[in-house]
Length: 402
Image (cartoon, rainbow, N blue to C red):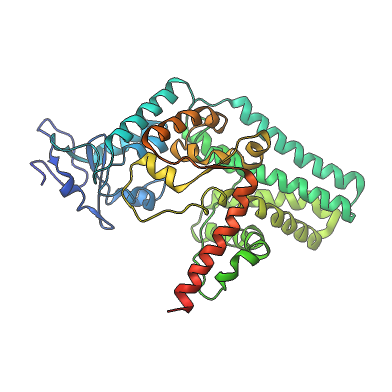
C-alpha cells in the first residue's frame, strides 16, 4: 500500500518525502478510468492525461499498472522536453524493497537490453545521416518527373500509361516508407521538424477497420490477392481518410491531402481528361496497395503469439515480429522494414543503422535463448497466404462448427 503523500493526479513536488507504493497497489490501477504506470521507479497517475497523449491513449494505457521505462525510452527522443509534461503527473515512487520489474519479469533481460541500448547510443546509431534521406526524397521526385515525361513524350497510349502507373506506384510506395521514417521521429532531433516533413511527404492519416462477420474467411487465402490490397488504398483509405479528417476538423492534414490530389489532376487531366485521370489514379493506388500490404504484413501477420500478456520490452518485440533477409533490393523494396525486429526495439533509430544494431540484438537473443526469426523474402510472402489459410480455418471452426 502507498505510504504518505498525496495520491491524486497532479500532486506537486515538495520537500516532504515522496509517497512510496508496492507493485500490488500499482497493479490495481490498470483500469480505463484509473491508470498508473512506472518509469525509472517513479509512479505516475496518467488517468486524465492519457486522453491527451500524442501517441494515443491506447498505447500509453497498455502499460497501466506496469513498468513502462523501456517503452518510454523507445518512443521519446527529447527526454528533457517530455519530462516537463510528466512532473505534474508524478505521485510517488516504488518502495525501496520492491523490484524494478513487475509481474516477475526477467530483470537480467531488461538489464542486458538497456546495456545494449546504451551501446547503440555510444555507437551513434541514433544519429541520422541527412544525406541518406535527402537522396531518398530525390529519387522519389525523379520518378515522379520520369512518369510525367513518359506521358508527355510518348503520349497516353496503353503501354506508356501502364509503364507510368508502375513508376508512380513505385514512387508512392517509396514515399510511404519515407513518411514512415519521419513519423517515427528518426530523422531530425526536433519532433516538430519530423512532423512538418512527414505531413509534406504523405499528408494523410490511416485507420483500422473492424472485421465483417459475413465474409467467407475460410477462403480468404484465395481471394486476398483480388479483394484485400485492391480495396485497401483505392477504396477504403481514400474515402475513410478524407471523411475522418473532415469529421475531426483536421484542416491542416486535409489541406496536405488535397494538395496531392490537386497536383496529380493538374498534371494528368490534360492527358486523360477528368474521368481518365480518376481511373488512372485508382489503378496506381491498386498497384501501390499490393506493395504496401505485402510488405507490412510479412513481418506481423505470420507470427504466432501465445497468451502471455506480461513480457519485458525486449521479449515482447521478438515474439511479435520477424525479419526478412538483408539485401540491397530487400532494404529498398521494404523501406528497411525487413529489419522489423530492430525497428520495433528502437523505433526512433534511423533505418540506415538498423543493420548495424542487428548483430547486437542477435547476440542478446542467443544469450537468453530467445528465438530470432529471419526469413527469405519469398518465404515471408508465402507465409502470409499460409497464415490466412490457417486463420480462415479457425474462423470456420468458430462460426460454423459450434
